[in-house]
Amino acid sequence: MSTEDVNTDNAETLTTDVIVIGGGPVGENAAQYATEDSVLEAVIIEEELLGGECSYFACIPSKTMLRTIELAHATQHLDGLDGARIDGDALMKRRDEWVSHYDDTGQIDWAQGAGLRVERGHAQLIGDRRVLINEPKPVVVEARHAVVIATGSQPTVPSTFVDVAPWLSRDATGVREVPETLLIVGGGVVAVEAATWMAALGTHVRMLVRGDGLLSGQEPFAGDHVAQALGNAGVTIDLGTSVDSCYRPGAKDTGLGRIHGGQVTVQTLGPTGESTVTADEILVATGRQPRLNDLGLESVGLTDEDVTAGRLPDWLHAVGDASGEAQLTHWGKYQARVVGAQVRARATGERSESVPENVPAPQVVYSDPQVTSVGMTEAEARKDGHEVEVSQLPFNSSAGTSLLRDDAEGTAQIVVDARSGLLLGATFVGPEAAELIHPATVAIVGNLPVHVLRHAVPSFPAASELWLPLLEGLPRRLRLPDRE
Image 1 (cartoon, helix red, strand yellow):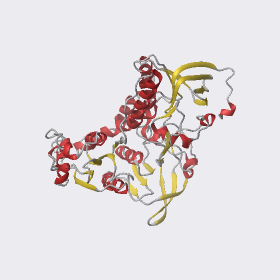
Image 2 (cartoon, rainbow, N blue to C red):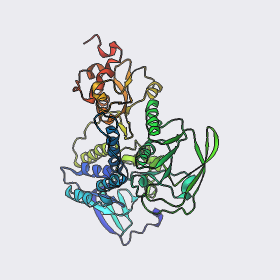
Image 3 (cartoon, rainbow, N blue to C red):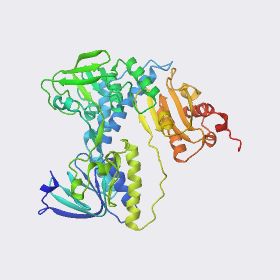
Image 4 (cartoon, one colour):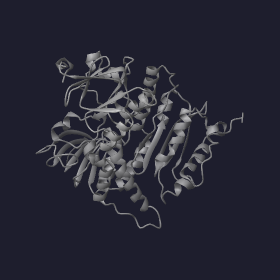
């Protein structure tokens, strides 16, 4: 509905202090931090499930399945264990329990317990600090202080696939019918994680990747390790391959995670020329874009680009995927905490907290092996003008990481500014690597030079001991400066 068609004559009017459009974890955090320990009130407007994409269709269901698979794989790589068998039905049952069977009653109870009001329906801006909820009945909500856009993101679907009812990320995490064969278009995070659990469920997976490697934007060795592991799991990976056309008889949205029609036929162009590929289902994982359509931005003189560029009036804020920044739940929640606290401070007249500059967004890919990173890659640091020193080691270079599996394969790397000794970035690829990245995040946020960081003593034989040989791999002038 265009804002030109809006009729508010019969609408109920509701006044509050803060309006949050979008009730995922990011929106919930924004509302909570904007009102906590104050008399301020907030209304969260959500047209689907309170708890958002992360709780029901992304982070939680994917990690639920991947954790089980990770442990099963670990038992196959530890002497003394006979190896666990993955039970697909039990795996999906556990997933359903963690997503509360797609019921948000518990989330509603939490919001009400936190003093937050939840309104159902689609929200549109209709003026400064004014939002219309179109359904189920028209309600105009007016904010005294601020409106926060926390509408998340949505999959980007190239026109080639629009008419074939492809699986999108929600279908992959909500899989109900396991196809015998699956094509995955894309080589990013969603693609490699979905390939991991679908292969574990017994599907023959074939990935069609336009680029020359997986996980572009990470250190090249990260994609290489994941590609090797997926290959060992039976996944076929076609690099440098584009899809020219896609056909499917009886294409129809048959429901979440169910096969959407007949066999899919794809014409591809790859390094060896043209070829025809068929499969029972196709998953399009070619990226996501901020969900800003039909939000009524034009009513306040704004465009989508204004939102993602941060060109907003002082009463309007965008957080999470909708802001155009890193599409990570924890990053969006961080943004929401900062913005929420700023809204609260401005509304109450209190002093706003000081926020560090250049806070990095850590990322984890829950493949097997896991990939985790924060800050700059080596290439990004050099492009940014830094003179760098790099320390790179096999992941099993410490007793702690070697004990995780008998063949704990992977790579660890840190990138350091050669002049200041400040950590610029870190990447870990290996089993349970996600647990190793936080020290790097702390060091970057706190501007800790590596000669100070080496005095943070890791426990033996914990995996964090890997930080010792990494730091020792740097030149002595950085580790032990003369002034010590």
